[in-house]
Image 1: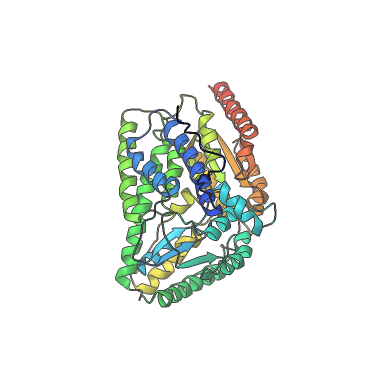
Image 2: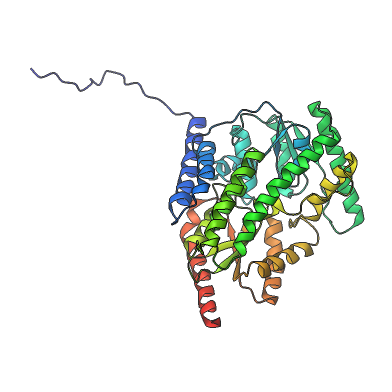
Length: 435
């Protein structure tokens, strides 16, 4: 008689039940895998030097690997937090802005329905304590830039995090604002030094300024190559590199970015073009592309556009003006650091934003731009409100602009890609007509 291997109904089968935290982690990994595969395999002729960054994002976002550091980890909620001060006090900065739709859904319980996706996603991540690349956060520094982050920071404190509030002016043209911000940075320096039990030294701050400066030089070296007629690197890789700056070791990041520069420079010498012969040259501006929410940049380049320049706080704005020091004395250096973060800022939170308009027009000219794509996250009022004045500036110089309001939801794909494709095609027609 043949033995029946089928288990009896009465037999209990062991089942592993996935709890919320495990399911949340799995869904985030699935998001990251999908986008990273699209970046790695969805385009021809990938750069070999980009493998470091591809592997880094795979470890951090797909496998949830953590790098343990024996230094205080300072979470930052905005690029206006002076990294030079954090490094000088022997701590490690970690940018907390988050791009996961899974976290956005989780964080939605803390915010009104039409709120910024980035803020909701950041709250969802902090609630789950699922930080990128680090196993902990010792202190979160919050500047009063974004209104929604400012109002939600009390929720972050209720989650049990230690938060430092750093005051930021809403006017940048006046001497009063400059002095106000300098005082804020001086106070931050003093308070953080006391919090960490670490004395700020002239040598330490000078070394930190040089360290950040080297990273800026590497980025600008790479960015200059995007001005070429035959562009040797796609925008999707640039966004991945700048997003890695949020969490990677700064010296390792600089070294690996220089390797990308060297390969891209060789491609430029060989006349390699990463895009099509008639691909429109796009300037991206607005709400920041934060991994894995890179859907708009990917759609632009999948539609045969190429992003050759950007003006956003997850890329170009990170590396704007370098610290300019007249005298290498301690408090002169602290003030010089403060000036770098205010003078170079083109965030739409300011009452007037002539600097942003000027900056965009400079980029249009320097990078030979064919069109502008302006993204605003639904609920981000300052970007929504400012798009009209930017549209008018672009019309004055004859540059078409597409305004796109998005969130982190994957459901927008079809309609959004249709609009992008139509915009790209209209610029191709325009270029053919001008030949």
